[in-house]
Amino acid sequence: MKIVQVQFTPWDKLYDFTFEDFNLSKNDKVIAKVDTALEIGTIVSFREVDKLEGEEFEPILRKASVHDLEKMLVKDEKEEALSYARQMKDKYNLAMKFIDVHFSFDGSKITFAFIADGRVDFRELVKDLTRNFGKSIRLQQIGIRDEAKIMGDCGHCGRPLCCQGHLKNLSSISSDMAELQECSHRGSERISGICGRLMCCLAYEQGGYEKLEEESPKIGMKVNVDGKRGVVVGKHLLKRTVDVEFKDDNKKEGSIVLEVDLDRDKKKKKD
Image (cartoon, rainbow, N blue to C red; front, side, top):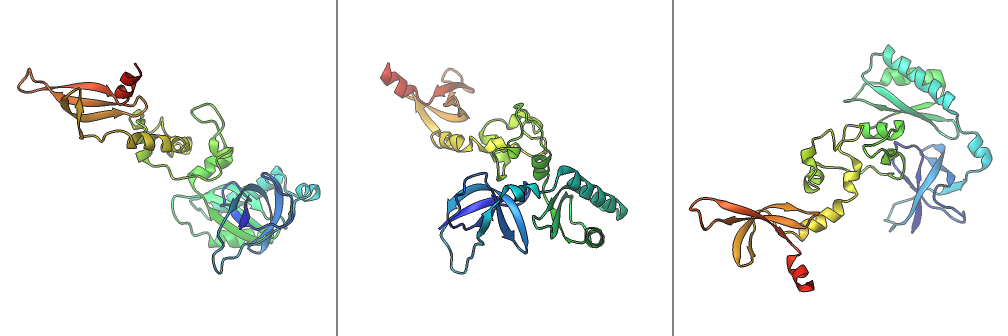
């Protein structure tokens, strides 16, 4: 079963829909129903899924027309809504920060995106926003990485943030990735993005590093090099070399460490 994935806001999840005879392409604007509201979103991708028993997907209603796009709110209107929400947040002394606002295409619902360190009791705030706007109000807590995706900036590479461009899903980045890629020693500031979290680009080459790791002997493994027995004490994945420690026969106590090329035998055969 082929479905289309649509994104309605940069900080919300991707939604799956079925589609019929529409001539759809990536980045097309479409109209679809989400919960009880009509929304206008952007096609991110197409994918095949196995439909499970009892699982239902809503259909794309239609491709957005020029008239539909003209009805979308302008930046000034969104800023006015955000300004009012921030004033009310200060009125109730709530420890939260509003980042973005999204109006449904049919105008029936407004969703405010915010960040906070913990849970926030915003019940009175929602009542105030509902009275002011006269619409259904939803507050959605997002992460600090989503804030960077919305606000934008340049990364350490000097290019616009990946999360604002091609990176649609923010995958989990762990310190193990930095360890495997031998860059954890640079310090957290140099391998963290403007959001304060580990840079998303650490995931780009992770698969390659994992393959190199599989092809390399483990630390502590005993190996033979030119007839001498040694122990692997370090490795350099990109260089495809390992540091091997040998006992020094000329000394009762002591050892020497040599950097050994993992491809040395292949290179000898070529020579």
